[in-house]
Length: 96
Image 1 (tube, rainbow, N blue to C red):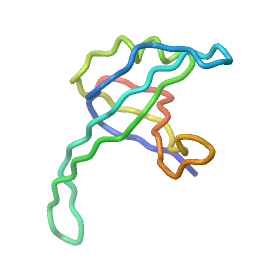
Image 2 (cartoon, helix red, strand yellow):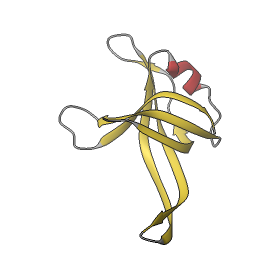
Image 3 (cartoon, rainbow, N blue to C red):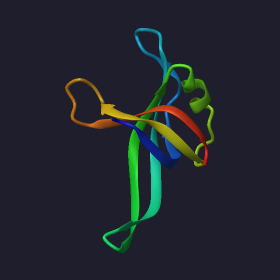
Image 4 (tube, one colour):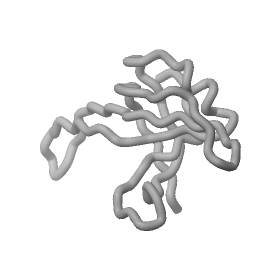
């Protein structure tokens, strides 16, 4: 199963664009920061992840407040068929 749930802020966001098939899409960079417990030790975890929202959710995502915290739901996939880099595909989000 490939499901990812992440609380993050929208650090960067591109403007709404359309794929050649006419699907609306918004690309972004999400920033996560949290404390996690691993092997009995508290650890600060911080990272950025490339992401995008496609289809009807792209309009709502495109107008979401930059820097605000949201809970994102989605999945990971390759950036493109020939890439090993991963991109977070956002399928839903709500205020955290």
